[in-house]
Length: 131
Image (cartoon, rainbow, N blue to C red; front, side, top):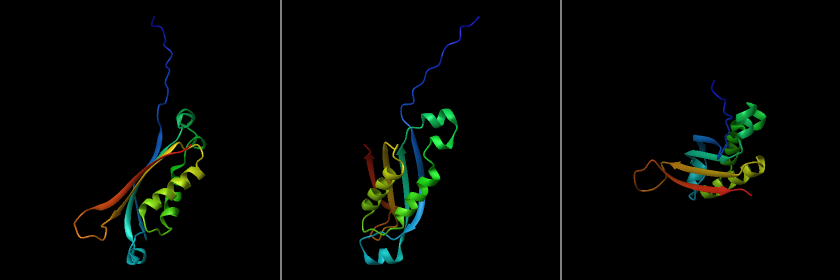
């Protein structure tokens, strides 16, 4: 008869992610960018302790990604000159709305930026550690 072994696991890292979020917004240094607007693509990755949710199967134990999405939409609706500033605001909002969050990686790409040259986008990526 085979002896049963006790399985032990430790969750090393866990994240909630939104990938390829497409939003029309009015960010840019040039006045016409804030009037006409651009399409932006965002990737947001939030470090969050998900061991309880993985074990319980209860939405109350996780970071609700629908709420995270709405937070991103709300911050993108506030015009800024720099997308760096938008990413900073999104991180601040994540930290205040989800106190258990441990980190955030935010990438914002401006699709078809108004420059001489052919490219898909110009982007910034910022990584934050919350304490």
